[in-house]
Length: 201
Image (cartoon, rainbow, N blue to C red; front, side, top):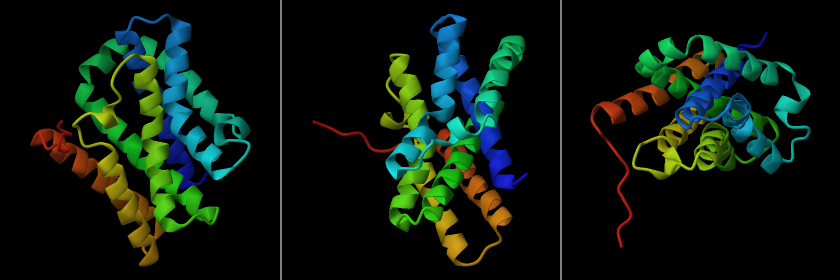
């Protein structure tokens, strides 16, 4: 099994848990929580595929993606107490998730012949749109529209990924380095309270 594909499935699983946790805070029933988990996990990839005209979208033609989400539901129910106590761990997992989705989204766009600049945007779309849909459905201001550095980390990672691919860096090393770059940006931003400037009237 291809490494990037495996990492993409892991990212889907982690994002589904992220959506389920937000739904639990809103005290949604099991069906509603599952829907939130689903759109969080595949919303970005679906949006990317629609924009790229790539049909059927990824999760429709590969059962493993919906299966990863289905597995995430009982996993979250069974281990919910441990998950709540592992907030830092899941922050890290969530950050790994956006890194993996940034890479896979950008790589798919490049494979389809999209201009590199737009491929970078497609990588960001893959990583953050699922969270935007999740927060909107849960009546929250989406994370990327707040001060926190989130989408910016994805853009930086996507640029680094493309640059290294042009320099001939071995793909698996490229995936690892890009993931580390995005994680470091997110962790440093949180630790030192680095934010994007606010719009003022």
